[in-house]
Length: 433
Image (cartoon, rainbow, N blue to C red; front, side, top):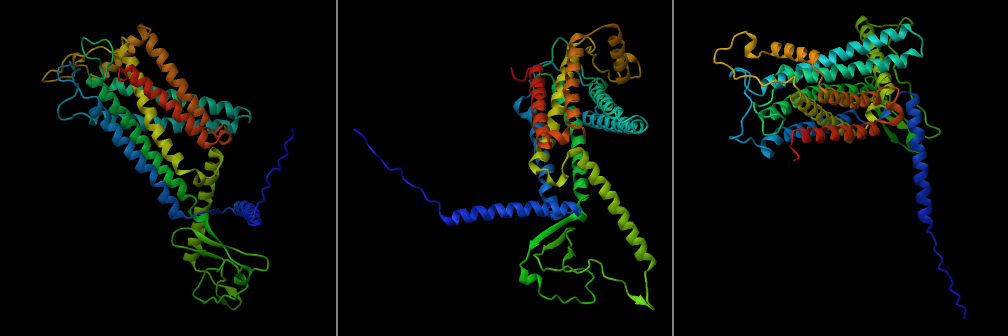
């Protein structure tokens, strides 16, 4: 027995096909418009809108700091019956001011030394063959990573963070855990302030090249436009108070008027005032500086900074906080497990400058002496692992790699590494037990 069944025929409405073709045409027009603006050195967007969107970055960073600041206090309160390590500072310098200030100072030193290293690398690369430039960049990145990790460990030693007498391993029950947590927040806070400030400055570099594109019909473009003598701007390109410009998109047959009006004439000669010339030279100089800054940023990121999504910027700042917390927790846990960190005695009521009172300088000298006479495997391996992680992230952020992988890829990889360090640090302090 044979069965024959006619398959149903589906007919696509003509309107759907027309809409799809119109969408494709609009996408092609948008792409062509972007290319045309790029050739002119212009970008679509509003300066005020970009600044408003970027405000989400500091807001999300502040919220992250607030949540992480109360995390150890609310989730892991200290047990009054648990023995605590003595606080080595005088009562007039209470916790957490020494931790926050020291961490911010160490990060500032890391920033200055890193800038010096990269500046020296750039100077040397200009005198060496071209093939030596990537090698110098790699060496500068490695040295900057070593300096950063060393200063992070130095902050822990300088603040006299030692294990509680009678406890051979770090634990969140000890007040030392909160001190390390505060040091990490101080380090990340200084980095966040500088990073957010640089973000606003980077967006400000595009203030004079942002335009608002408006499509007009052929009939509108052929209408005569009356221009009064007081109007010193062109109808085709007008400067707005928001720092962006409005650019009209003309069809065939449209015509643009000159962008700059001619100065008044006297006896056939143009008259220029001295102040106007000085202001014009200063404006040109500022535009050249902004152009140089945009080119340097686009060389590093591979795309204009204003095209980076705000979510990526917010996530990048949160990654920095998690990275700092994880690095400090891992390094401090390995340090407190090593023979370099010895328990300090109780602070006497009248401290003096003798070494027995465990001053910061004495603690550093004792650590260096122990480091030269004893080999600590745990601290060494932990420091190497942290350096490898940080160096990998630094290499991904170089101009040789970042434009190829893209900013979102780097931020997501940074998130994975930061989470690994963060949870590893919590595990070493027995927070996850």
